[in-house]
Length: 106
Ligand SMILES: [Zn+2]
Image (cartoon, rainbow, N blue to C red; front, side):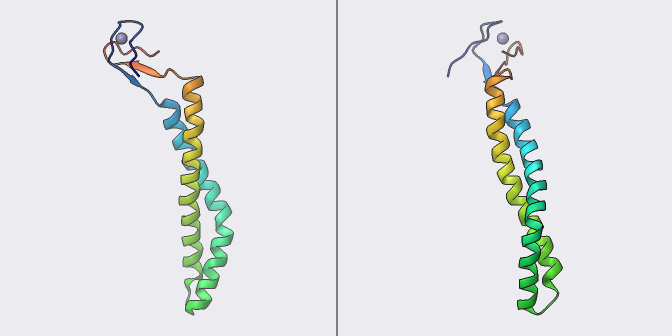
């Protein structure tokens, strides 16, 4: 979409994604934390099952693998949710465009 700077009339403007970036980071961290917390229990159960099946001490390994997997999937889900929220913030609150010639935000 062609847009021009309201200050210097330059057409060299870029779209900023401040809210999206911040939202993505916050969402990833929050999602990873909650993902670890909610998956730890099931990860431990899966690890224990695997440990019995393998007949070894895979229980603790399965436990941490479950937690890591939970953190990854939780982080990913949180990142997507954060980006969605950030997109809304971008549209509602933040300056969406930046001029490359006079650095004005508008
Ligand atoms: Zn400008």
